[in-house]
Image (cartoon, rainbow, N blue to C red; front, side):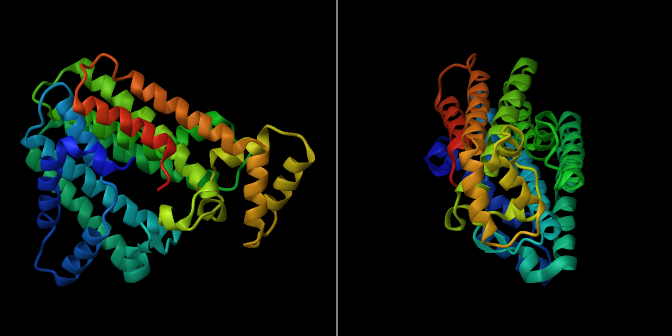
Length: 324
């Protein structure tokens, strides 16, 4: 399954979105246009705009405000990825050289700021206090989540609740907000619908991030677009490793702990992959991702059957099994 097939029922809306996304960023500053052209040529999954359009159509119809909101969310998402690459010294993004690797720190930080400023301008133009509140809250949570991840780097003694709080803040809350904003911009805005879809997005986001953790161990650079083992290299806390270290007292767990605590060489990663799998970390994390995906689907049970509901259910399944 791919996102193109899932988003077929909103193809027209996504086409309008793509047209607007690039044009809204055009300026008379040539360097900005050069970078924006590069970003547009290496666009991502557009998961958040897809979720906004699907949720807006789930119990009503999308509106002009839905398109504006999708632009705001994707501008913030793109800006955050550019800044993430600077923080992580990431040379690749989606299998291509990252903005950071081409234009380096200062320019990357500033182009991220430019995208944030465009998002802020669109928020003012939208003039919707509820959406403004959602965006303000989620950007704060995302920042807290990223800083918490930096604070906890290398501390593999944390409990699972702290790990889940971290990924809820840095990843799941933004996906949840996209779904909530879709409900808020629908022609049939209802409070109950808003909360159900926010929770759907949060569960989907948790599945998405846990699967992302897994891909650091079982993925390949050709499909993920980033080096396998990159999270481990940066001492990031991931669920497969956390489980493997904390739920076994045998010799293999001791061997894994010794490697993690040492000055690792590139060849050590293959050993870590094997040990994490043998100690049940891969299986456990996959089970957790699938459990969150099932919880997401349950949040849609009260909505009538439609192509939009079907696509959202497929997206939940996709989040837990994706390979890219």
